[in-house]
Length: 453
Ligand SMILES: Cc1ncc(COP(=O)(O)O)c(C=O)c1O
Image (cartoon, rainbow, N blue to C red; front, side, top):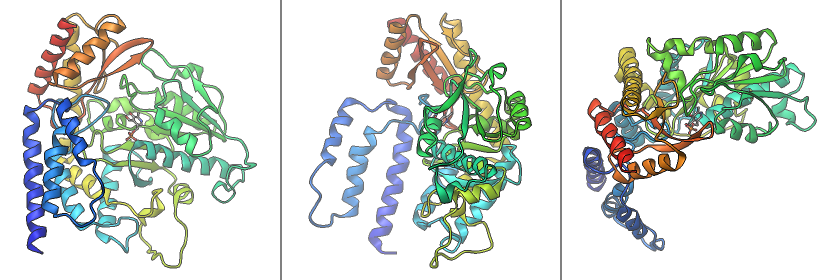
């Protein structure tokens, strides 16, 4: 290796390590001054090459302070996990490998790691072992990919080859989903030509779960979309009842389980996912609760043949095919990074018990937040069954002020939402890096913010 390349990579590792070590002592949101200094990166494209060490120095000195400390233990916004040490290390090594994971001929190592990771994933997520699966960028693309398989299958039943003929003149399809569906599913429907608004919405209960008593009648040309883990409350649709009805009536069942399906990996939470294994396709994120680096999600489909027919690239003379599982048969992209490496490393490093502990521990922290806030007199709006807490600090204006004060304080970061016409603060605990001390410090900061607002 050239001396300069070695020195640069060593410097990058040293800076990255220093960055992570510094997270505990810095505000979670970047200070305004750091954001203003980002402008120094915005200059004319250099006419001639610039030394890599100078580039790295600038990125670290200007970029690092302007990051949001999502890799630390006190970020509770959206549903964001940190990167497990083994997953981050695997990501660095895989970056050096620079593998194109699209086909086996380009990366036998990536393909092998994907195959092993898939077997492990189906096991810990309690999904049918015969599933086909693709490594995609996140749950949005996983929903897209699963729904593409659904679209293929229901139209094939109607004698229509949608990949060949498109949707022009196709038999109509009905998509049924709960009122509390995640927006990414609607986005996926838009991309697939199924229409964001051309869906039948089913009313939901106070936790955001689809009401089984309001399910319309379904048929073989229906795609029923269920949710495992509501982004606000963490609640699960009543899958046993809904899946039984959908199966009886021949509908395709797709599950958006971006973070909620990970409950299957923790014995004390596994009852939450009961019945979801009866579905036909599932979308799951790895970059959320499995705590691998972005971007990483998975689409699973019970009928691996339907999945391949919907997604595969098709033949081209220059593309070498093997008799093994060709990764590009299961993902919308052809060339892509080797996401399976980090997933393999995360699961290998945690083992079954480490994964269960990650899920259970973070759920326990969510419960601690809920108890601490309730005890202080604030209203927790959801049943805290998983890792999500919704809290109101009084009227909407006051809740908004508390969120703003908390974000400014910098001890931790939580965002806002509207839940059943009321402003609420969302707390999502999804990172291996969160400790009991982080939770207590953050709870103190929330109560301080609430007292001052
Ligand atoms: C239930 C649910 N589905 C889908 C998504 C979209 O996931 P991604 O941002 O990984 O595409 C999210 C993100 O929070 C989610 O909570």
